Image 1 (cartoon, helix red, strand yellow):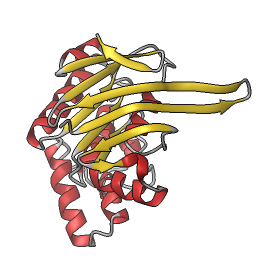
Image 2 (cartoon, rainbow, N blue to C red):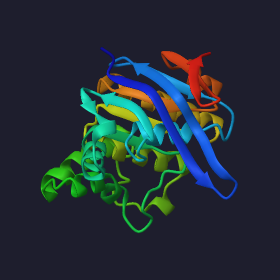
Image 3 (spheres, rainbow, N blue to C red):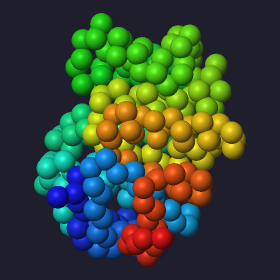
Length: 224
């Protein structure tokens, strides 16, 4: 059975011009340990797809099962708990808290999860070092380069030891060389931590480095 199984997923939003159908009965199956790239034109709903899969947004219809858990039947509180414990998110623009250090940013999911201070600091510090930022623990995001901020964001996404990694254009705001480094880091962490990963990307190099590439078009995903 796939690690992630989505069937007949529907998601729409109300707009001033009426209802906007984004996902229109979409099916998706991702095997455990697989790294899948999602490509598609701007505005087709790739970010919405990740938000639904990760429990940030509730789906309107369909079924969604991740690691044996039925996401579509969860209430908001259960979905938040699942997301905090089982899902790691990496975004294009980092979304680091500017007034907190790199260490404090990475600690945040553990703080929300109720992990004691000493344990969360140790886990966060070890992961920051693993992503190549030894000596940067106390730096504020504004003192870090774009690539370094993304490394902090990757560490934050993985500090809870999630089973599923969702990355939304993780290299989209970086220069070519830095993007290549971040791609390699994500692949390394995917393998080391035995993750199942879904990456939205416009970068053909990033897509080519994944196990499978799918295109989101007209509210459905299909092989490229």
